[in-house]
Amino acid sequence: MTTGLRAEQAAGRRLPWGPMARMAGRRTLFAVPVLLAVTFGVFAVADASPFDPVKAYTGGAGLTASQETLDQIRANLGVDQPLVSRWWDWLTAVLGGDLGDSSSLRQPVADVLAERVGWSVLLAGTAFLLAVVLGTALGVLAARRRGGRFDRATSGAAYALEAAPVFWLGLLAIWFFSLELGVLPAGGLTDSDSDVVTASQVATHLVLPAAVLGITQLPWFFLFVRQGVGDALDEDPVRGARARGLGERTVLLGHALRSGLLPVLTLIGSRVPELITGALLVETVFSWPGVAAATVEAALAADFPLLAALTVLATAAVLAGNLLSDLLYGLADPRVGFDG
Image 1 (spheres, rainbow, N blue to C red):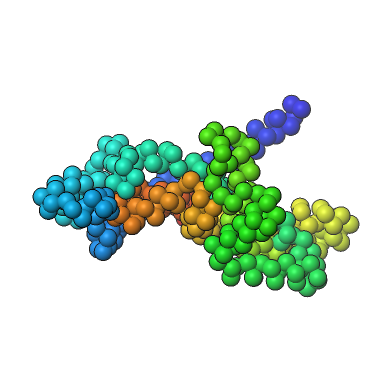
Image 2: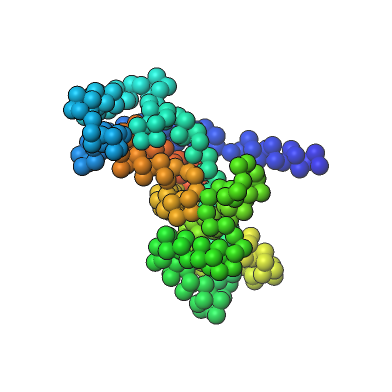
C-alpha cells in the first residue's frame, strides 16, 4: 500500500509541470488578441445587421411610440453611439466586472449566463463523454477484424451518421422514443406538471438530447480509433508482443490501443466547435434551457452585450479544448513536447 502510494507520488513529480505551464501561459497570451478581435467582430456584424434593436426591445408598442421616445430608448440602450465607441464602452465595463444588461431578455447578462451556462455544460459534457467512450469501444472492436461483418456494419453506420443533420436526428428521436414508445420525455428540463427541479427528472430529460448530441460526435472518434488501432496492430512492436505469447486482450489494450489513441487526442480540440454548434441545435429541438435560446434571441434583437458574452464563452471553450488536446498529446508522446 505504502509502496504504491510512493510510486504514484513519484509519477506525479515526474510530470512536466513547468513546460505545461509555459505552454498554457503562451496560449493564454495568444487568446487575448483573439478574444478582442472576436468581440469586435460581433459588434461589427450586429451593427451591419438589418435588425433594429429598438424595434425588438419595444415590440408592438414601438409602432405607436413617438420618434422622441424611440430616440430616448435608443440612447438608453447605447445603440446611438458609433460602432467603436459601443465596443470600447462594453470592453471597459467588462474589465471592471460589469457584463452589461441584455436588452432582449431584460436582465443582467451575468444572470443570463449563471442561469443557462450550467445546463449547457451538463448537456455538452455528457454527450462528449458518451461519444468518446462509446466511439473508442466500438472503434477497438471494429479494428480487431477490419473488413469483418461488425466492422462493415459499424463503419457504414458511422458514415451515415456523419451526413445526418443534428436537428433531424433530434426530431426522429422525439417521434420514436416520446411519441411512439412514450418511454422518454420530448423536451424541457422537468415534467410539465412539476414546479420543482429534481435530479431524477433532469436525468430523465437529459437522456434524449445528450444521446442525440453524443451520437453526432461518435462517428469521428469511432473512425479515428478504428484507423489508429488497426494500423497499430500491423506494426512490429505489436507483432513482437504477440510473438512473445502475450494475450490478445493485453496486446489490444496495452499496446495497440495506447498507440492508436494518439490521433484521438488531437481530435478532442477540433471537435469542440462542432460540439458547440450541435448543442445549440439540440437545445432548440429539445427545449433545453441552455444558452441556445438566449443566443437566438440575442442575434435577432442585435443584443450586443449578450452576443459578445456568449461569443467570448464559445471562443474560450474552443481555445481551451485545443490547449487540453495539445497537453494530453504532449503527455502521451514525450517526443512532441510542449513547444506549441
